[in-house]
Length: 164
Image 1: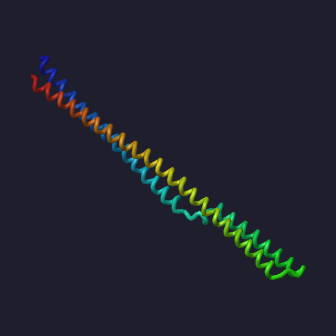
Image 2: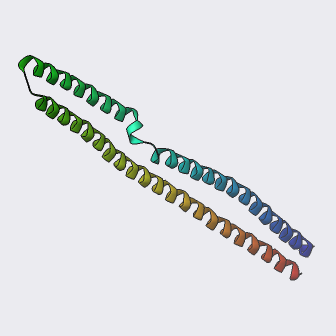
Image 3: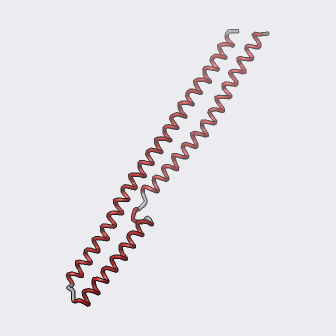
């Protein structure tokens, strides 16, 4: 009677091991799918943010608009002063050139800030991608360990059967 009980116990142990491994596999697939989704979202975030035109952002447009308005006001003042006080066209042209340089400098500063922003975005993307890849690697390692454990359980149960 104990031989039959041992065989049944071994069989149930093997079945439980296989069932547990199958359930663990399902859970791991769900986690893997979630990680893959996060990777896709991270890639989409990166593509959108990295490829944005820095000059089209609201803050950059505000700076450019304010600079342009200040330049227009200074150009009007310079022209009015020249008309009233008899200034030369050269002085008006010099003022306009200085104002144009100010606009160019503002655009250059926006471009520099945009490059720094891109560097930050790339760094964030790479860090998050490395974290997700590490989690996937850990998941694959656990999967391999579970498969090895299940195989060992089945082999042990088979050995118990053979011994009877």
